[in-house]
Length: 197
Image 1: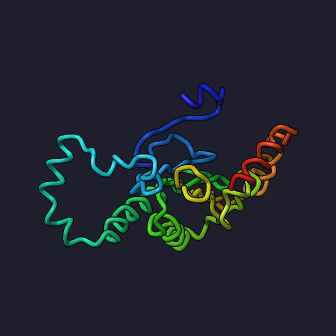
Image 2: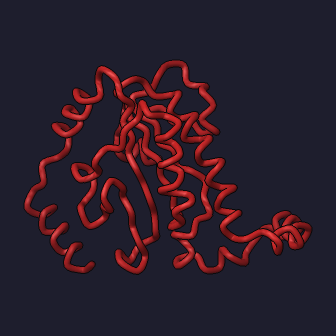
């Protein structure tokens, strides 16, 4: 729906576990990773308790197991899956291409720790500065981060990786040229948003 609404013509959406099913290397891959969702709990408090009947049965069968597992172990399980998805996505992108890793969690196990492990396994990727693409109020060093208590919206995390290779610098320059120039109303919106924070 968003692709149609934004009139994007050069995008192919593949939904899955990033298993390399793309016919050709991609310019960019978005990993919208499954996560614990702790960044959305403020808005969806009832999501902690509302389950479908199947989920209720599974939860009741696993209560004993869940009682002995520390919450951090649950995050570690998610992080393992997230790293696998990110590594698979890295195989789908061409040299000079981009991978964006995004979650709606606040947990470092699912965010920074996954990024660190990914970079150790894939030294052919670097983190790109988010500043040209995201308002500074949402940046935290090399990451994009929104915090409910600070920004008044759901918590989220994102990082943009570039695959080292022949076209990385050229692609970055082309993207920056394509960014819309900030007109007066957009600058005003940005100033107001920063004042609210």
